[in-house]
Each structure stands twice: as C-alpha cells, then as structure tokens.
Length: 247
Image (cartoon, rainbow, N blue to C red):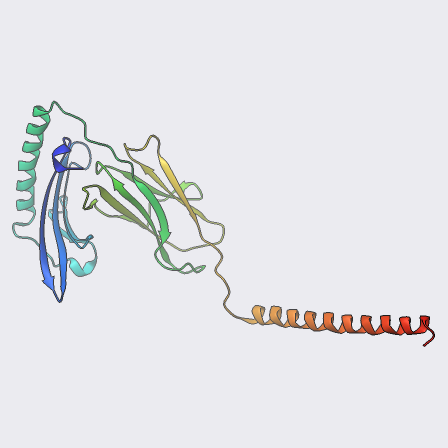
C-alpha cells in the first residue's frame, strides 16, 4: 500500500539511521491523523519497538517502559499538536479533492501466547497480537472463561510496519491456574465479523521428583517380574515334556 492511497488516514513518517557499532538502527517518528477514534497519534519507534508516545491527555511524552520516561522531543506536546493540526487540515483537503474515497481495509492476523513458560501459580503475562491491519482502529478485549477482564491489562499504541500496515499488542497480567480458558476478542472493520482466539495453559511436564522415581522403580520391578515368570514357565514346560517322553 502506498501513502497516496490513504484518504481517511494521513501519515507522516520521519526515518533516519543512527549508527552504532557495525549496526544501523531504524528510528521512526510516526504521526497518524484519521477519521474516527483515535483521531491522532504520535510515537517514536526504534527497530520496530515503541520507545515513547505522546499522551495528549497528560500533554507529555510517556515511555513505553519506565527506562524511557526521561526521553523527550524538541517542541514537546505543543510541537506535536501543531503538526497534527496541519495534518488534519491537509487530510480534509485530500478528502474533498477525492470526494471522501474510502481507505482500504485489511483484516488483522491474531495470535495469543504467554511471555514466559507457564508454571501453575506463577505470575505471567499473556500477550494478544493483532498484526498487519489497516486502518489503525481496532478493539481488543481479554476474557477468562468467557468473562471479560478489565484489570491488569495494558495496550500499546499502533505500531507502523514497513508496508504501512499496523500492529498492536495487548498485555494481560495473570496467574495460570488449571482449567482456566483465556481468549482475545478482536473487532476491526476489515473483519466480516469479530474474531476470537483461545489459549489454555498446558500442564507443565514434571522433570524429576519422588513420583518420577517411584514410577521408574515400579516399571523396573515389573520388567524383572515378567522375566522371572517367563523363565519359570519355560522350565515347567520342559519338565512336562520330559515326563511325557519317559525321560
């Protein structure tokens, strides 16, 4: 998809490379203006990971992780908002020129997985990913045993990809328990109907322990007993054959 085909979404992507030791980092500052919600977004991404984003309610930059909270940009929220105002004006000009032509709609690919290996009773993070969709308007909800969850959830901004489609992550802090079924419910205008993916923790394999030792010992004793029994059976058969032949 080319930027010129977006008539309800306007993007301004500023890209430059920052040299490190034998490596080039791809830094992207992304402005998004569109009809619908959210009507604006600004974030700074490095190598596909979001570093900071603009919280327009707090009117300041926010780090995706605490280590980046000290990062700021020149002009701050006022500068970003001024650029967005210009983009909104240009978007309206484009819409009038092309008579409000609809933007392409691409459905997301959805996946759900835990952050680390699952252990019963150990806190973990369940991740739901919506990937490769357009436009950047999507609803993602977690459910446990078909009940919607609202606590312990964190959702990212819209990350832009090289083909100008988007991805978004939703994180759920949870503690795995046997029998719990989790699902991620996704709504997007590119989908014919809402999509739901499911995830259920598998019982962790026991690597060692008393139970394993007992099972192994029982198996060994069973094999020994079987061998002894077969040996006695063969000897008894030989004795009976000898008696029949008068030996």
